[in-house]
Image (cartoon, rainbow, N blue to C red; front, side, top):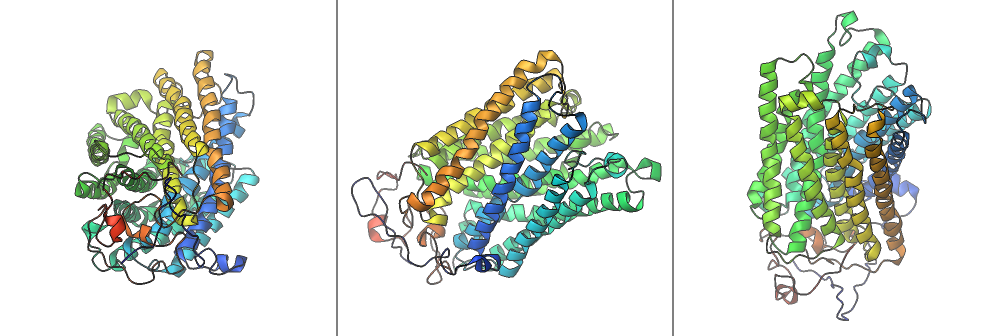
Length: 565
């Protein structure tokens, strides 16, 4: 198998040509998009959808920070504030963070990376997007008609008995959206098992595939639990069944067990795909194979498996026995081991690598710093004594955001910038992509690091009024949120600008390894002209299948790649 890509270099070599036929122009009209079964087009449908909910959730985040500038609750009434932070969390978690990478980059890249023409069940793939849209539409209906005030955790009996908001509508929306996750997970598992190209053995799979395989297991095994739990909440609200309300013979702690049995592994649905992206970026821009490939691959599986065993650390103060708390505390320490393996192995890969400081690499390095802080503070919350002091404080808010925003979104944006040339065939490079990554990193730390201090000092989460002595830290946090918002908005402008004015990328602008870089950019409708055969190891720079001129280049990447995307 050979490639025909021309790499754009600053030495005056010819610029690559944009392919005449590709998946974006294979058919025209809105109907062709709404009825498509092409995994690449479904990626675009998801990308547009989740970007909308990211923006909407960000608006709610801005309202929260505006309220907290002053100690008095003078922007919103308490009930309104409850609805604002609840809708922020529901939109960001269920309709952005969980589907962000699997539904977009996962959909686009998994068939390309394993040498397949599409996913195993193309129609099911399209159905997953429609399930997402239906569930999101119900949630939007609840939002515009009053919202929900229970917090994203829907804790009972408040959610089942006392709340007068649209809990049932949102619960049904999330229930339907759960089918989107299940359909996607099943599709990915079957695709990875059954549709790999000849020679693509398990230990020749890119680490991006390993991370999505582990994520898909969590989706398939965990999502039904939260779906049924929220369905029971709806039944109790509508028909008075006594599942969770003590007045009806139910047990509210049972709800917490069911909810967190899914919701803690759901953290890894959000972060594991980002870890896969980071592996691909670090390998490409250090010109090295990932150090300890098999350890990193198996660590993804370890996170997925152990992640199902740690939910009880959310119940340290919920009538759980001390002995159960000790066991869950130990398991919480244990789940940190495979995450640490990844961070150490990435660091070892960076050591003495020929590093190109492109925009994707900036996001990858930012991920390493923010995820490490988030992981270490998670160990603190997994310790019984410290958790009693910091439970339900802003320390928990900061920890969660360092993982989910600092980790998951940094990985997501790094992946979008890294694969943008492959998705669109255009480069987006220069000053603004670098500035965006810098603003996000600085703004994020200014927003959330003060919240660690607030939480340790005793500031409870979900309060819209607070003592005067906390104001300085809240003002710092709100100022950081302003910088962070600017950093998040910039890619929306320059990436869209690049669709028309960006330079043609060529097949492999980064000189990266992997089957996805041997296709045209954008890829053709069926991905590959012929079935690829894999007889090289993952992250081999360069495998023998590349043209001889490319194979002769030094593996250290002496010829520079474009400076950024």
